[in-house]
Amino acid sequence: MNTVNNLSLDGNAAAGLLSQVFRPEATGAIARCGACGAEGPVGTLLLYGHGMGAVFCCPRCGHVMIRIAHLREEVMLDMRGAASLRLRVDG
Ligand SMILES: [Zn+2]
Image (cartoon, rainbow, N blue to C red):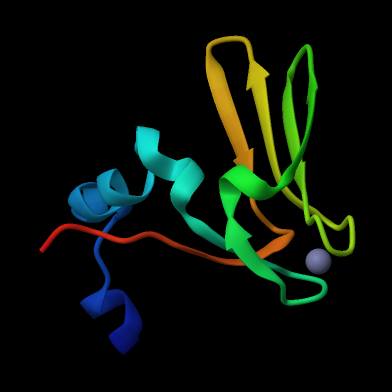
């Protein structure tokens, strides 16, 4: 018996939680660099924009933290370069 499968839900169960993370005020979210550990608001990261999207880099060490790409009708978010992202929530 696999107890992990018995306790898990699909991602739709986290819709309310995800809506707290992905919102217009995300530039105020605190991002932690996955390379050097520096923390700061997303709005202070170095931004390199291009036709397909944007690349956000750590202002301390230059590590690529976040990539956003427009791919036809989708937006792809790659945050593997960020150790964490913290947002203040109401209540
Ligand atoms: Zn860094």
